[in-house]
Image 1 (cartoon, one colour):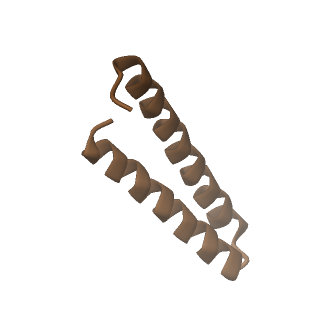
Image 2: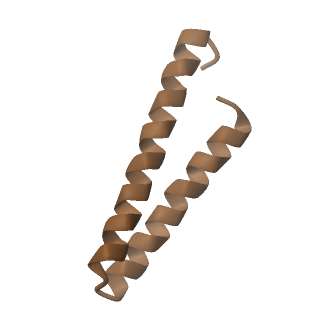
Image 3: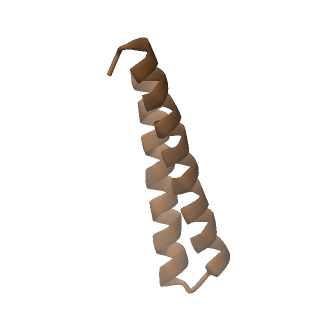
Length: 59
């Protein structure tokens, strides 16, 4: 996985955590769920990239 892809996925994950925290603090369930969804999306992308790395032998 390229450094840029890793950075993008990490940024998406951190943005999701921030959204979730703000949603929790303000009792905004929509924002909380959006944050959780962003984190899930980032984790899925990271897993896909890791699988590609394994098949390419990059680890």
